[in-house]
Image 1 (cartoon, rainbow, N blue to C red):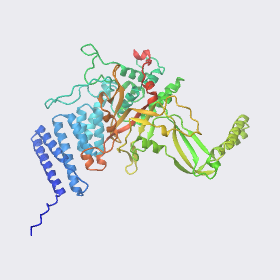
Image 2: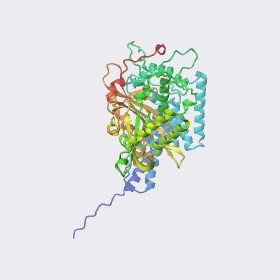
Image 3: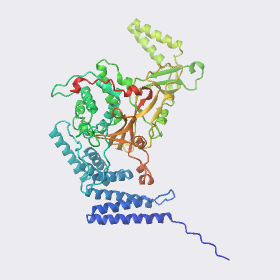
Length: 604
């Protein structure tokens, strides 16, 4: 009989993976040999080859050997951190920052990557980012003498700069020509793309402030409100008020680019001259240490707009911040499972005064902004609520008025009690009630604060939630408005609650440190059609794609090894913290800058 054909031996996936891993290790070892010879360019090339080989290893769900998985991860990390060290010896600091950031996506607590990125950030003049990385190093390893020494050097630089320039001028500012050092042969550089907007100088850890200021500046309706606040010229030697400092800052941002060599106003290079925020910071009453403390962007927006509104009220002007940005909620209570027609008719409403921003707390539980808003507006059951509470409180007030003998107050309270009886609002004692939340009014400019910080009771500190959280370019909130025919709500003159995304403030980093940038959809100079997305990264302004501004700011899992090797290690460190939408029906008015009135003393 013919022999049965022999089936091929099953492929041992683990064995094949180990072979590929051995190849990657061999390339890494060659890199180590070149590094010992101080041939850093060749070392970096071999580390790159090893990293590419490691990246071709696909780990399937069937592989359960954790030792193998850990080995792949360790080799990948070693390739990246070794490559960063070789590049630092070549003084290619931009490449070091990029390589270390890739390593930190895989392992956010990798001390080597954090420290090497910090040293290159310092060489590039990015002192704020360097200080943040060094502080993170010390959080990982409090005994690190290298990190302590480097951080002390940064603090000495800060003090020297403050003493030599006075006040806030120049604290941790980036040198105008800081960048890649020319030890290796020059690489071809893409041609500079002129942009029509100016950046803002970082004065230590003020990236959050710069991002908020750029967002407010690019909303002309808010800019008009700022310019309309009455202010006076500042005598020489005196500190400007908040209103004057903000007006001056916005006016400087409006100025056209410097004249080019040809005298035709052509913009020089990739960006215009950045504007300083030191005068505004001084008007806050801050000192130099305050500029090194990063604040939560949502809390800052709330307090900052509150202060502007108070300035407006002090001048007896209309509350324009509330009009433009104020969100009004209405809570409605009804008896849950009413036992009679009378209890079914019982209703209690409570309106909240205008406030901003709208804080979204359901980042981890919801996959996007509409789901989070629907969750926020969903009904909740409250047990043993005293539905007679309002009526009983009025009766107590009546008794006090009778004891005082105040006839006018007695008459007013008696009329209220009679009205409540007539409308069946005396209540039904303690009942389980159903409470719902709806928007009573939504403003032309809608701020959302995405609350990505959550207190961790195990660690005793807040941690950043890096879960994916999507947001749409268009947002229709009609279904979340008060829609009960029994509840009268005046029509909104600013139009239906349909919005377009205007700006995204993005945070990269961890709960205790990181960096903010603003993505803003803005119109360019007169005559330019349509609006583009711009990235405002302190003093650097550039045109970006819509994908970078929106989809890449969702957070969630990162691509590549950090995703394949699983767990929280694979989450993106970059995600949106604040969204700004503009109502479609009021867009023309919101973006109209034709009738701005800049005070004459601000122009001079």
